[in-house]
Amino acid sequence: MTTIQDASLKTATLKDAAEQAGRDLEDASALDILRWAADTFGKKFAVTSSMEDAVVAHLASRVFPGVDVVFLDTGYHFEETIGTRDAVEAVMDVNVITLTPRQTVAEQDAEHGPKLHDRNPDLCCALRKVKPLEEGLTAYDAWATGLRRDESPTRANTPVVGWDEKRQKVKISPIARWTQDDVDAYVAEHGVLTNPLLMDGYTSVGCAPCTRRVAEGEDARAGRWAGRGKTECGLHG
Ligand code: SF4
Image 1 (cartoon, rainbow, N blue to C red):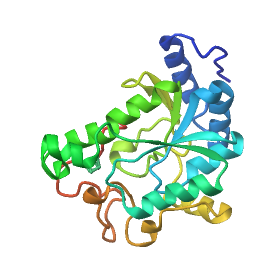
Image 2 (cartoon, helix red, strand yellow; image 1 turned 90 degrees about the horizontal axis):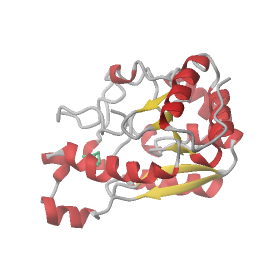
Image 3 (cartoon, rainbow, N blue to C red; image 1 turned 180 degrees about the vertical axis):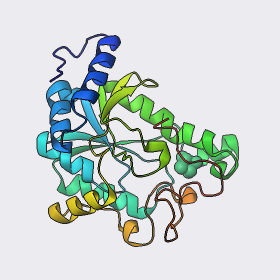
Image 4 (cartoon, helix red, strand yellow; image 1 turned 120 degrees about the vertical axis):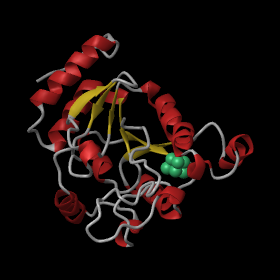
C-alpha cells in the first residue's frame, strides 16, 4: 500500500502517491481509506464537514480519535446547521475547527451591496467558502470530504483518493462509493448526528439563502442554488 513517510515530500510525490492510492484503495472500505489517510498524514490530515451529517467525521474518529474536523461558517447557515456543529463538538472525539470568511456579512454587504448571493453567487461563494477553505487547509497535506458519486452527475467520477489541483493537496472521499441507503444505514447503526433539516424536506443542506426543500423525484442537490444556474460552490471544482 502507498505510504508517505516524510510530510515535506515534494508536491509531485504527493500527487503521484494520491493517484496511486486512488487505484489501490478503489475497492477498500471507508474505514480502511481513512486508516490509510491517518497513517500516512497524521496531523497533516483533516476532515471537512458541512454539518449536513457527521458520517465522515464519525468514521474518521474511529481510526483517528481527535481528528481535526474543519467547518466553514459562512455567516449564512441555518441555525440547525450551527446546532449540529455544536453537538458534534460536544459529543464526538474530534477537534472541530471553525473557519470564517475575512468579512462578516455586514462588511460584505457594505462593500458589495446586500444579497450578493442573489446577484453574484459565484463571488459570494468565492469570498465566503472557497477562500477561507483554501487558507484553512494550508496547515494540511490531505483533506477528506463526504462527496458521493450518486449525489449528482457532476460527482459521478469522484475518486476515493485523488489530487486536488487547485489546492495542491491530497483529497480523500472515503464514502464516494456509498449510496444514500449506505449513509442511512450507517447513521442508524451508529446513532450518528445528522442535521435536523434532513427530516424536514431538505436532502442537501447549504447556506440558508441558497437552499430549498426538494420535491419528490428531484435530484438530491436540486435544492441548492435553485434557478440560478449553479450546482457547486467551487470547493470541489
Ligand atoms: Fe453565498 Fe449562497 Fe455561496 Fe453561501 S451558498 S457562500 S450564501 S452564494
